[in-house]
Image 1 (tube, helix red, strand yellow):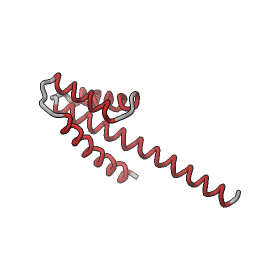
Image 2 (cartoon, rainbow, N blue to C red):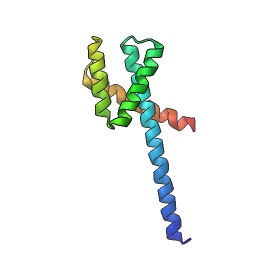
Image 3 (cartoon, rainbow, N blue to C red):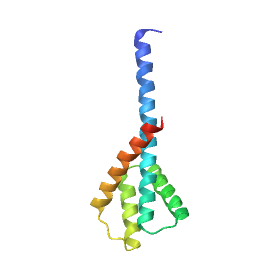
Image 4 (tube, rainbow, N blue to C red):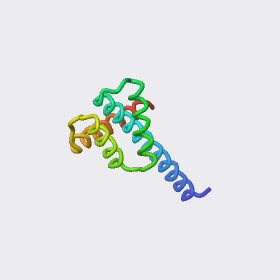
Length: 107
């Protein structure tokens, strides 16, 4: 194998690892966000776990943070929780940072 082939394989491996890490961080962020929102809506711990899974799956099915922001905002408004989209975005960002730290510290 030539040096160029080795470099190309190294870049492909790094890209694959970065993609996997990004997915894990996103899924963790979404779960944390779902758990936080469920708590704000007064859900039981069992219902909160289910809701958090629904948030994760929503982002997998329809990628993009705006989709889960819209979902959580609508759900919170339906439960008469007064919160703005801006504050939800801020919380999602905070939990994204927390998820990154958790994943990095996990190994």
